Amino acid sequence: MHFETSKQTKLNLGIGGHTCNWGTHICGLFESELERDNIVSGLLRQGVLDKDQQYYIHTNNNDMEVKTKLESEFTEDNSCFANYRNIKYTQAETYYRNKDKVSASKLKQKLMDINKENEIMGPFKVRAIGEMPSSTVSAFDEYELADYESWVNDFIVDKPWLCFCLYNINKFSGSTIMQILQTHPYILNRGVITHNPFYTPPDQWIENNKKFFKGKKGNGKQ
Image (cartoon, rainbow, N blue to C red; front, side, top):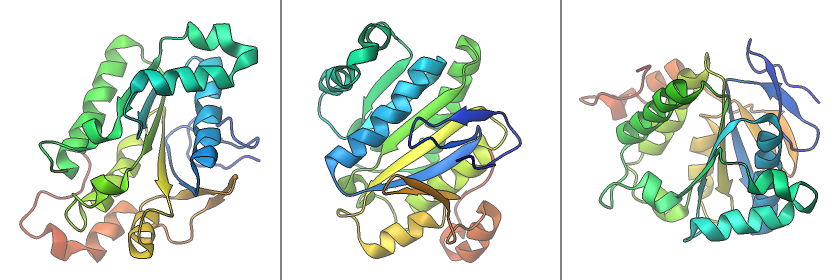
């Protein structure tokens, strides 16, 4: 099934036969490690076949363990996957935290740095997959995470990027999940991608939460 998500060219997600367009931000909800691994392996496998630049921010403590596990799941494509160098693995705690604190502005800068690096190297089409650990969310200011997630929509809208954010719904409160859903135009839940009825466009999200941004640089295109 195809979702017309932007004016950019079409891409195959590698999940359930779904296709969309580059410049898309999706919230993937899962309940178990197996469900998460199936999502990630589908996205990365398709990215390998399409020769995309890929970034996987994971919650394992060892990058090599993640790489080995993924390769073992692709028996039929093992040689292709093993020789593919355009997947960068990063531990979530390392990526999201900065001296035990989490800053939306610093996360925005990291994406901008990745984009600049990608333009110099390629340019490539980019698949950025990130699982948010519950321990990191607790380090955010009340709206910091949603600020970052909302900003991502404006940042990638005209870029050949797919941002796929993963949340274990068993590890977050219902209020946190609802807040996050406001910042993602599409949802993957139980293998099915749908338009998100809770989505609030960035400008409107800022207006709705302007008390948080009083005295702060806040959200916006950079």
